[in-house]
Image (cartoon, rainbow, N blue to C red):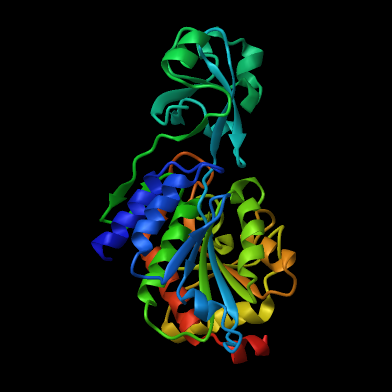
Length: 364
């Protein structure tokens, strides 16, 4: 892996980008994409559009190549300050799906109103002060607060410039273990997908493709695919590939039921709560993987959802597949992903885009 690509993955993971506040992620992506695409656009909801063709080529009515949307979402789960108590602790809400057991006693960064990051800790009542009944009942997220070590509401507001609406993310620094090619960091759902989109566009730069590929890094997926809805109006794709950092199940599932494990290659899902994947498109993707010798994983999910369901269902009759990098412990503060899986996902995406054209699409 090139040093620049490794640094991209690191920087995307470290970036502050809770839903609605994806600015730093988009800045990093813009810097990396320079030279790989013809031009970039951004909209008010912080979607980033990456165009391989010139504006004139995209608008050329004589170009009958289908428009392909290559998408990943730029946001991560996190928190938002709801209110500040008199003692200086802050009540919060979660942004994106999380469970209470993953959150307490962890460090977070709060983005203050003056643009500075303030360190805090998610805290609950210490065991010294809890009753037996309290210790034995499930913890509720509403019982958690963020503490920055202040002693009053006035201190929080006037000295640290924190108020209701300030966002927060896990305070986690990217790490990499060369022995097993595994990275540890926050937000690999879906920053690893963003890296795939950017790297694939870089590797395909200058190549004539059978589709007009538009890369999209869409915002606010974790709170209802909101950025994707806006992007669809702009891109109007005829076919789409979504790249995800999907939950790995290899640490708690029996061997026969592991459908998304580290070091096993890209995972393609047949179904989740948002979509039944286009059967001919997914078969085509698996055939390309077989041709290229890329190991793959097949998944059928009882839950979960992605932008793929929104693209397929919102625009009507758009063949869509979701290709995922396995990520352990998604929607928690610390997540693992394997960079050899990242490489295989990029190879598969490039392989599909180099072969896909209007004739293949018509066969779907």
